[in-house]
Length: 408
Image (cartoon, rainbow, N blue to C red; front, side):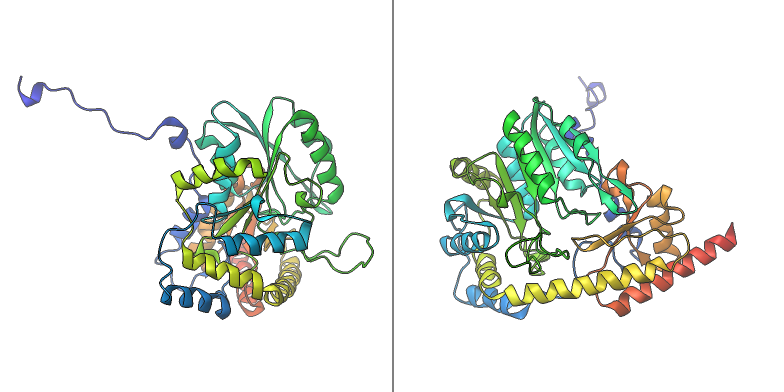
């Protein structure tokens, strides 16, 4: 048989579940900005400020001391202890036996999903939502159904009855992100209480993405002190540590450590042995020197985080006021996170709109469609920067709308 008689090999492809995943439209818009001079990027969820010096110095000292070896799958003991104290201070007694350190918050989300869902399982997610949360269960073969927040005079709101109706007894896992990316919506304590009771009745796992919990701008609910809350309402405030609740967190937002890739999980102690196996087969462990930086963030960073939240609230209020003066823009001040998710002319085709704004005026925001069909009609603007930069962005938005109105 000659070579010409051999069968032509088929094109190699990834498995169907992977090929069906949505690509990131945020990245698609950012890629459209490559080669465009003087782009103002507000598309990614990170501050324009570097990680605080005391955190960077802790990592440098750890590296200088030779902390370059493998560590325990669940994290070094001093960091787990520091996190246990931190979580206890915010949400009530939590032991290190309920803490696992992960290589970023998104890694924590993958690990949580791998712990509790598999092929054919039913997952419910509240949307609009950061696409990673919706797509991760699909990688595992799970089926994801969504319940959409509604937008109105009070901003983004949850229809609690609709969510509870969707949480049928055959549901394996509920995904909640509060404070929410992209909308800034925050689930209320009463909503959490109702959802927790419902999930308890039906044995449904709650995976709560709470990475923005410290970026919360509302006052505390009525209580003994009545002081402003340091954190958004959390399922950890209501649930025991050994029931079907897994809370995900990250060092990325509250301490400006996006590039460090360090997160943690609070979960039932009974899961930890199996979670350690999954960490081993995913990443083995978080880097030792990065974990030392995490200890510095926890032990020295509270004043920094509180100052950061004050700065973000000021930036939020400034941008809301500026955008509210732009004809055709409908924007509300959300109670949490670091984004405005607002409607504007042309946003019914938000991906095309955002690419045009990058190309024509050098303004980079994220398309609402990146966060699912329920996000179409909106765009997301990260306001974690100084107000002068925000003002420059608003001027570019006004110029884009003027020029396109004239062209029509």
